[in-house]
Image 1 (cartoon, rainbow, N blue to C red):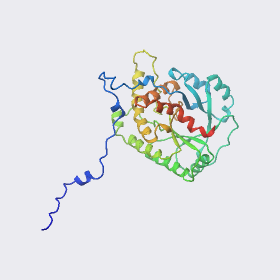
Image 2: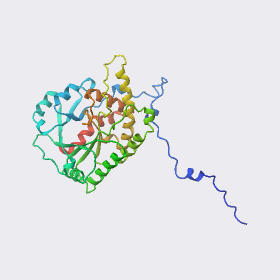
Image 3: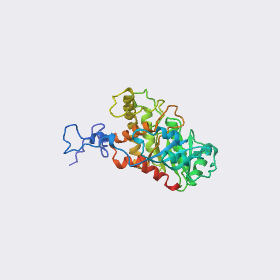
Image 4: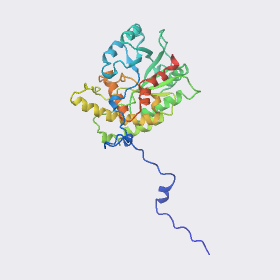
Length: 336
């Protein structure tokens, strides 16, 4: 007796059942306890206002240090242990006395470096480790040669990424691929001005979620994480608006307070994918924004927003300690 063949699957059924089902990702807020007064069985997480790093290392301080010190206010005051100073060769003199007066140690000094020159700059004589800082707009053979030489020499290179869109992301990935294509290089790359990236504050958050620029960010930040020697610098964003201040405790909510909440909502949208891709081990805190930013930003105000944004995502104390201090010490460890 002939076997009766199995009936064909309904259209689309086979395609839907192939492989394991992709589970949705729950937001971290889903693991927060409900507001039901059952704290004994489900203890509340610490308030974001109480979560501070054990120490702060600021990797983006522009000379003179005295100007930065004036901005160190609020809860940031007294927490900074070390800084990386961005200075020209003529500004190196006097940094030691400035740091002493500010009560901080200098972890390294960062001098300007042109990728398009194709060669390494001469390294000035100073008692501090020297790193290189440069701006990136496009990839060229000269840029690849210069970056490869810097990395082979063991330098830490801070790259301020200027531009946005898929073309900029793809060209940056091409630069990193070509510059690190040889054997393992001892140098380290720190990418700035992409966490958070330039953004239009006029775009509502609801539209941002499905906007092409945000989807592109998520995709490319994941790709960049595969470069193991790359860190992300967490700096004030280039949003054509001053960093909102934090009002003193007890002061009534103001327009600035509402603006701060809006900033944190947007910042968390960018921090989430970055943490998922890079982990807490390759993100470092800095207070001076990109050189392309025209808006003022205070170190104390940015610290409050940056710290609260991480804490509100449910990041534990160990993660906060790493982002705001420990990772910088590790990124610059080879220099000391």
